[in-house]
Length: 407
Image (cartoon, rainbow, N blue to C red; front, top):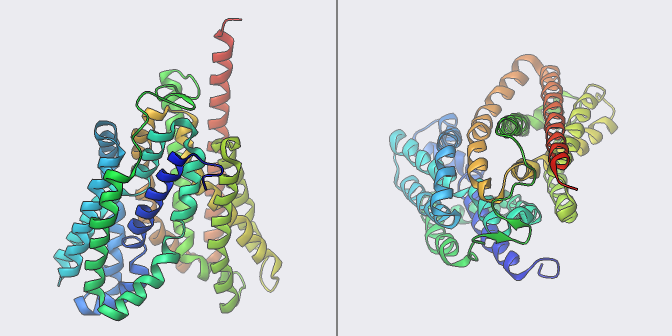
């Protein structure tokens, strides 16, 4: 890793990769393995147990703007450390709960931990240390964190079988306390106080008027929220969508498994581009790939090629856009502003992630695959238009800046 990264960057990636994999694996990913095990023990329905994820995402969304202020005031390392403590407390309550009230309360705490310890604060920690040159580090970090379920699903399954689900939650809380908390407090390099390799942390990549900055934020918020809604809505219904489009049970499973591999490969391509990558251009390409992928399902039926084409284009596009969602604020805002803006963006994004699975499931059950395909095409087109508008806004800002620059 250090052959193309500084030692400081490698240290940042190592600390955050470990803590983010643990954070995602023991919270958001955890119910995928343990949800149906704990439901009968608690006397709760599967639906209510899995609603813990909705509670988590809504809580994280509501706290997003506050997280931005805390990042600016206290720095990402302390916010992430607070997230580790809150995750641990929520998991301890899960280990001890016996009914609805404590179960719901535990997921509220885990949601608070999510606002403090997942994604936006981690990316803010990178930008604090790398400035506007942190794009490659964030892409590498996302490459690792995309493996959280791959790592923790088998681990949690083995541990739960050996010691039971309550002790598994207790062990998970201990990892947050004794591994992630010290890593956040003592493992991260110190932030760059006033400047970075890319220049002042206060310098934005493009000079904009106040009105243009507001317009850029709205365009970024709309594009990233709609793309998150589309991605998180499709994933839980993907197998059924493929089956209704003509895939056999076995083929649907194979294509669903391929989605994760292709998505991670897409993140790897963005990582390989490094400083040459352009978040706005990447977002536009990703939206275009998703846009052309969904019509292929209309021509699938007994033909396999459209199904393969869909999973390749959609998975690659959604994988690239996952990186773009984290990096787009860096196309407009300074390194110092990144944490605040990313946390503000997390409010609509997390709300979209929380509601999308329910809406897409209802669409698929009531309207069939055709309704999901039509909605997905429309949403992908909207995202592409928004990204093109953002690129046009940035180009006009660059043109104005160059026009006033003295010869």
